[in-house]
Image 1 (cartoon, rainbow, N blue to C red):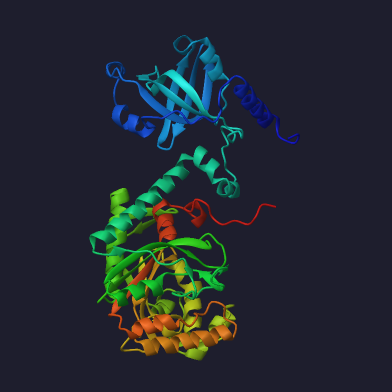
Image 2 (cartoon, rainbow, N blue to C red; image 1 turned 120 degrees about the vertical axis):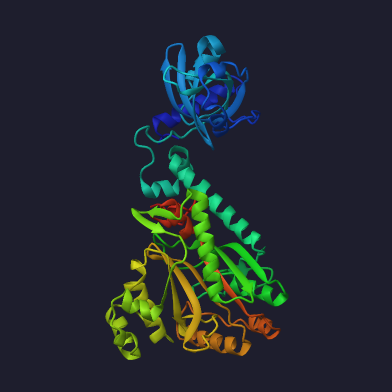
Length: 493
């Protein structure tokens, strides 16, 4: 490999030399018995005399991150998945041959260590190495010591390196796992059954979005990656389950931004004999309890702004918000033609089958959404953009629906469910007409779902929470790519 950098060629030569000497550079024989975080938690407050009295040997494995050699002794730092610890190795302790071998290790190598704990003169908890073994030889060098991996796109592409050298990144994903575990426990404690529904569907449904398409050879049929699990979860309500939820991966063939990734995680849940207001209260309770669990307070900082998650949260109808927040005069909001004209003047594109309702929603996106920093429920959505929602009994042009906005972005979407099969069929037909006219995001006709409704679905409410955006909020992450381990990126070059 003549074009390789010198440092990589040297490391490959070390591998050949190790094997020639009978040492396997990718061994799988070492079994650590301890983790760094556990040692720090158990012994981090003990003084030198107490550590000497332990008379215990500890066994750990980790990646070599830093070395400082002083002749016959070497200080080094190593890290496992739980944290970083200093190590100390002496020639007189391990022997001249082993010590020479240790000094030839490279940063990034994974080693197994055993030894005792002590404190240095600077009072740092340290492992005095008695034995060590090379577990995995690293061929690629770590990023420079003082600069690290700072190129943002490179960090996303080489997340494995990002996780090695940026401990705050690892913390985000530990926290993400904690958040999902909390949500699962929260739903379980309230009688919701966790279920799984198909990721490949013959008819994509549950949202208005452009799907990804694939093909099943044996069945000789096209399939779509799901854009939402909604229609399958509601089939389960028909089947007799009264409270169900799914933490799921969804796929939408749409744009990429700091808030959008084509593959994303949501939690959707449905409750029979409930209305959308019931789920608004549930989400308030859930998010505030989650903040308390993570930080001990309902107030968090996001990108320099304090956000108070303590219930109750503000509630505004969409039409009202256009005036109160978006500063559009009420007479224009109430005039269908004037509002459509305003939307067109502001660059909104109305697709086939779209009119006043879509214009209202797009003006909301432009004029209102970015200003909703504190938790706010928006209600009163036009029925035109809510093909699966129950009509409001007092105003048939409005759906019994809400969306939750925090920090200027949508976090959750929910509504009272439509369970009238004839009404649902007519709305599907309008969506089909829009699709035939060129709207690729319009809903497909789903005859089996209409058939399910004809068997009778109890009145219900359902909601979806964007897990990625919730994690962004609770970890102060500016981009969705910061909370997805492997975000979708354009190919290099």
